[in-house]
Image (cartoon, rainbow, N blue to C red; front, side, top):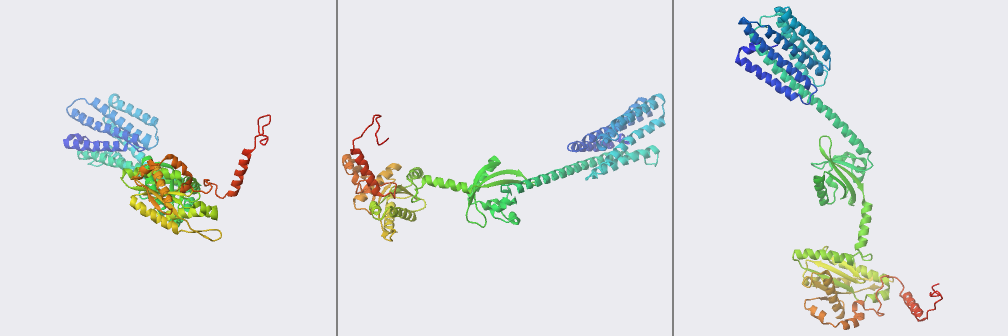
Length: 586
């Protein structure tokens, strides 16, 4: 293929070697990720041998002009040309032509060529045959190569193969013209650039082949992605659980199955109008979910409170969210389970644990635990707080006069009045019987007195009705303690109860505050006197000195009869049988 004119000028050599280096770079780039990578390197080795042959031919020409023997030069020249033909044929055979013609045929042809070279150089020297072999071997190699590239034009992307086939066919045609001695310009040394031009065009063709291979690979991947998306869509549609796909970047919903559409109350054709965050009731809940996704990439059994676009009643869902690839985008795969009934049961059980069943206020245990935490926060922020202890005046008289049912109404109305006249941040609890306790955060003793007085007046104005329609009014006495007294819950309740005791002693239906100097009076009281007067404490002031029964509604006359019967049994002498057991027990 080459022309000895390449080595006649330094510029020619530089240009040719530069073009050949470009061909090497294109082969190196194309080698990875293409089905012709081995064939590309066989092609490159064949062209490299062809270039070496031109150099040997140029050297033998100079030796011949000097009058020396050139048989050895000619032998190696033809031997390398034969090797070049074999490499080109193998390139076409193994990769481009898919093993047609196969390697044994190529090696057989190569063996015949080797016999011809030895015969016409050493045994039967023939200058014309040697000259012909210089063109026959390259013509055969490039013809194989051209047909090999041409065999790939059935592929979808074939522009690179067509260009390579045309270039190699042109080289074969040029060799045929040289062999036939057609045209004066064919043998001219001015055609030195044909090799460089061939290398550049072949490099371009190889790069296009690389692009074609990438395009084919992209199409295959595109089809795989489409199949994967179709499978995922089928799974989502047939899933018994509500499932939503939403974009990670803007939260826009791109797919929702039938169960999800029904769950969130949206129309199937309007799914893309919504974002997943539109259904969240609590913004912090959504933020927490995003934070966990950023850390874990997958969140299982995450409870969320949601609502539908057309509904005001929120409901609970258990969400499992994964980050997946879908249609060349990063999306959230969210599966949901309605757990509203379960959450309602949990809330019911929680309320039963912390709420008083009659008044629905917090119970004593919750009050003490919550106030303890509130006091810790208040101390950290150096804030004031107060505790009120309320007790219904003459509550036993209400029960005895109107019955326990009306007494329950009084307690319920008292609780309602307290909640209505206090802030959301205040804590109201039923402490026991007709006693109620209130925690007032961010409140000074002076402000607490004002609140207590307002509560007392509001309760005094409240009214309930008996079954006969009679008005039943009631009052409360209130004791007040503050953060100036203590930061202990128990002490605050004790001192507010002490202030309540003073309010009862001084006439009821009034408010009293426990002040620091009152500790002296508490310590100075004689313990025996307090025990003697304990049954007359106004809070527990009962005519029969009997505590309030927690079993409201049981007839008191039955209780008295049972007590009499028990007393009579105690007076009877016990009769024991031989077994040492009372006969009545038997």
